[in-house]
Image (cartoon, rainbow, N blue to C red):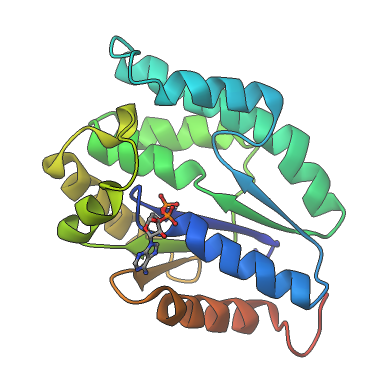
Length: 211
Ligand code: ADP
């Protein structure tokens, strides 16, 4: 399967949004149509759900409720933004998607991965990205980077949790080597982007043909 749907995964602070920005700039320069999204978010309803999920006062949110909120936001994002953009042959870049549910709620919080996969497929109408960059950074770098940020509910859960997430992403990457690329995020922003850009142009033959 080769659609123009590309996702960025990794723990908070790994550099997903930074790398997406770099890719946005290159696509703009080349006049290649794209949209840039974040999951959860990028439309009114999904952004409201994001607000609930990231609110550090919502400590009573159960793991299962949390999963369904993510899935609801994602279903809406897919229907309202992703499908129309793909139909218009645009590239769709998305900060997080189904793999975040598998890594966080599955590997991180211990919910059934098989069940979450079924729920993901239901929420996304079986649409999957054809390219997923997993930006991997070690725990020390994570906490250095996050110290600049306000720590929200998802970010205030500790080193052990992050270890499980990293391991989860690694496991996922083993399932489909054509789709997942683990990118060493402990390097400079430019070095990381060089690798991402090479993979991207190779996958979509950008320099030869913009279709
Ligand atoms: P994410 O979107 O994965 O949460 P960000 O792209 O927002 O991560 O990056 C988190 C912080 O780390 C930002 O302050 C960003 O400028 C910084 N950062 C991102 N990539 C790098 C890098 N390769 N080296 C150093 N700092 C980085």
